Length: 462
Image 1: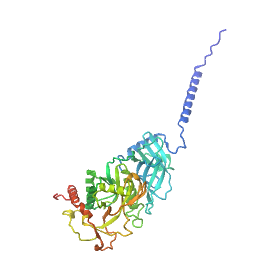
Image 2: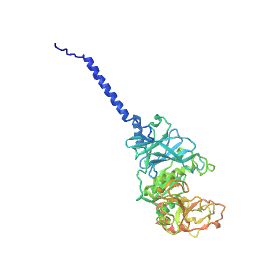
Image 3: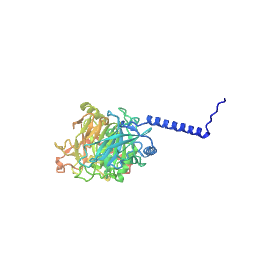
């Protein structure tokens, strides 16, 4: 007998092929899910690139400040203002330090969102509020963000509330700040000495500004960083001149656009939410900004000068301090007030043409208030190795790797030309100190040159 040749109808064969395709699809899907299942136990893990995340990455790269520019960022739904971000190389766990101003009594959990080469990564942020808030409701804080695995060199970062919804985090207007200090350095810095000035507001003192900047250069300072809130047009001309020469970096400081800042150092002396125009976050930003750019950093005001007594420059002074007090120290300099609002006869006259320039002439005020036990160590300022410092404040440091040392006043001390701190003193109770005059010849020539070039003394003959 001949056997039967069983052939299935075309509809049956088509149905079998379809089952094979469906089975293959589900098999690949299951394997993919197993391979890419996220590890929920990982505290800092990569965030998958959904379409909204890709938009967020583009927004990060487009809006974040470039080249170290300063741009404050208000965190959505929280009383937190981001100032800047720096990679921290000195802690055991590699992390990014975000300098911020925060509402101190707000209970908040932070999530750090990193923009890396291959997408977005997240980790939990830990807030450390500085002790020097002076009783204001806002204070300076460091938000420490551990580096997630696979994101060792993030380009930008932002901080959100850990309780925020995914829609909030993925908003297209989310702003990032640039992560600076990507590489650690221990030698060969562009600057020997950087001076951090914070903060300049409603400033009109042309002559003393020029004198101070020229004196700092005579002392060996290569860079002066000024956090500027406001000044008059004459001061702006001077700042533009020094910015052009490369001595000064002016950083716009718009903290008052976000917070009700105080004009004083205590709430009872000036209403506001944050101490003295946000001086402390500015000082900490400057310290980290120049951590790997400057061998030393001085934290002081524009009306203050740290003057050596036996040598003539900071370049000569620092080896003396390192030998006597140790290296990587914070060097603290006693404050001496030279009141410019007290009339005292001077043994020398100075200087033709300067009387037409607004501001204080420091060479005309050579009498200082005697220090007492209460004033000798108050309102001092410091020169530090920034790589040995974690947190700075107005007077001294809060956290550093080594200690701070008081510098003998016969080695160096600070000259502070300002309004009298002890107005009850009579002129004959002040102490004559002519140390500034040893710089006067070079200082006069330098100041005259700047005033002429910037249009304040157009007819002066040098």
